[in-house]
Length: 371
Image (cartoon, rainbow, N blue to C red; front, top):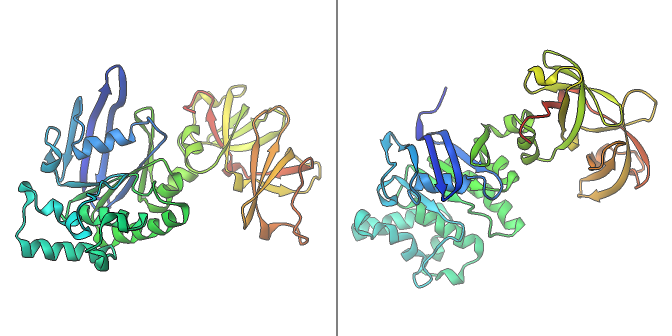
């Protein structure tokens, strides 16, 4: 059952001088969803967030929130609140005063007793009840992030906008805050819209991810949809790791494609889209996840032959950097330690290995598909 849209963008576009940041994008976000806008710098994700928050005005198109056209409305007249990347806390105010600030401004002023109650509830929600009297500089980075969350939530917005909220934290703290943020979303049930360039963060937190490219939405879907069936090589490369290899179609039937690799090896693959671009002799591009490549015996049957260049230790797994004949770029292979030989050996640099990958895990695109 589809969720009722709470945020809708129709044909939203934005330019800065001669640079077009957004190209007429259409986006619907359902009530209670956690949606992430993911992409590299300059792809349009922050511009989209700022249009929804009212910090930028669209050149054309419409933006509605909870059924109300807010395209021309300022931020304080939209039922949203924003957690900024730098948290933007007032250094001269206590934690409680920072959280209460949004309830003291003229447009949303609340009586003192109601304000105190809401601040106490918000601080309890983020686990900072005992820090109400502290100053921001007395807090850790993770605690300041929670104060910013409490300040945004105290006004009970319908939509919470998160502008790379965890980017200032170290790796261990960021991972812990991801768990807390996910639990907070589940507890509140309101709509979260987050901007990030961190693919792992997007995969962990989101109900749906919109991968952006050049001011457009390249693909939107659940994390598993984007990971297992990326629409383009660009999405495959941005969501998780992917080996992108050029080849030639050796014929196709429906979604089943035979691909000839640069070294002449013939492997089976699965077409993401079936069209004339996959006819025999046409150049194609394939995407293979490193963990889908399997080390197999060198027995002479049709497999990908590779040379190990380097090995990278990742605790529970090794990542092998390999080369195949006819290709300059490396092909990466992920090997779980528990699946290695009984003696724990891993192929050493310079050794020859054979790789197998099932046709369902070889994603085939016409060469002209967006990369």
